[in-house]
Length: 82
Image (cartoon, rainbow, N blue to C red; front, side, top):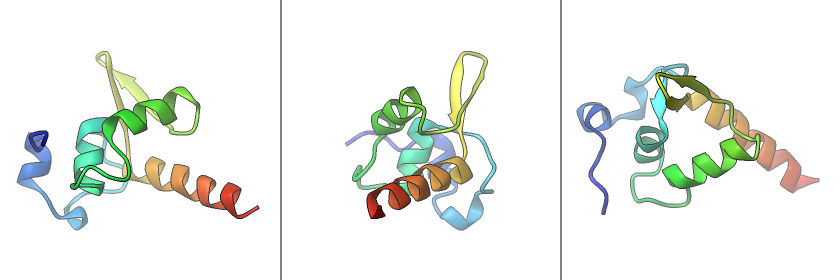
């Protein structure tokens, strides 16, 4: 099992995070899916490369938000329902 990212270990409750706070893929995956499923940091990278997940690049680090992940999942739900 992968170690919990430091910022997530300090704030493990999802309510302690702003929906627009920038997170690394590892932080987002650990916060939203602590068991490692259904999505991982690698899954989020794949979604970004496919144009499904909104991200920003800062200091050569790819970051996203909980809001962007919610939007990605909502689009997937709508597509699956059609």
